Length: 347
Picture 1 (cartoon, one colour):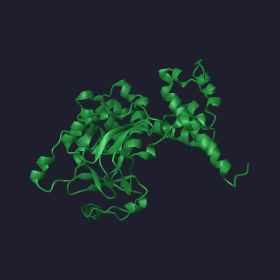
Picture 2: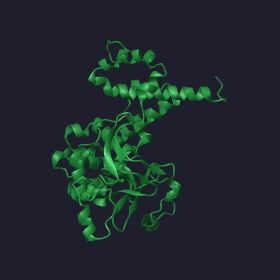
Picture 3: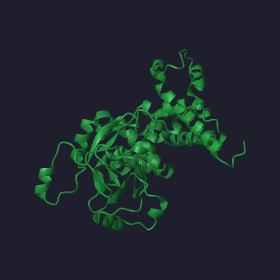
């Protein structure tokens, strides 16, 4: 993480407002892009690593500035790598913006430490628990026909996208491991869960440091009629849209090529977590829904013999499948609880 913060600092990422003079810029120089408004902290009961307030923050306050040079976009990767650019041009008519961004991400992953994005890519999660990552057993654990259909449809769509992009990946000389569906699924989950909205690319962008926020993109209604001048004026006046339900909001300042993040909470005290919407404790919630009664099914599926009440003995290879399966069980229990509480539900 320290290497990522140093790298981001060199690119101009900062939680400090823009200096009013060159002398002020000198006095504000630091080895880390964070510390004035935000700090990286670990919240084991609220989703893990995230950003905490380093001081008392108020609504509408600018808390992070990220220059365009620090945003991982397909345009940026293609500008730096002519081979990727040529391949994308040859296949652009058959690829969606998301497929192109995934190709660019995997191309950078394949470069290893020689990639300019390595300090950021090396900090990304090694796996995700999105619905599209569920296997058949985990999907069946949803037990609701419509939910199972949605999950299967999502997985089928991603496999179709991967098959369409296989030829460009081969032309780029990707290593066999990167051409596998597992790698494509990881990159898709990264894009699906971490990208931020940018007006010039439908796929969005990966924003180092900025994606530690719990971010909400502008909705369709707010985008209608929006232009850069209006957004820039709003930022300069230290005003934000009526988005009080969001924890953070991003905007783009075209004149200075910065992505701006504003706090839209009424007030946040020092050391408060800035991503509480990510908070989840699956094990506790599922236990309350008779988790132990169905855990034996999970162990039986993976041919594991152990005391189902002792989770500390779970083999390392089952940690990720168990996390996804717990989410499925938790969802179905909450779904059934909702139906039970619905006065119009005919049992």
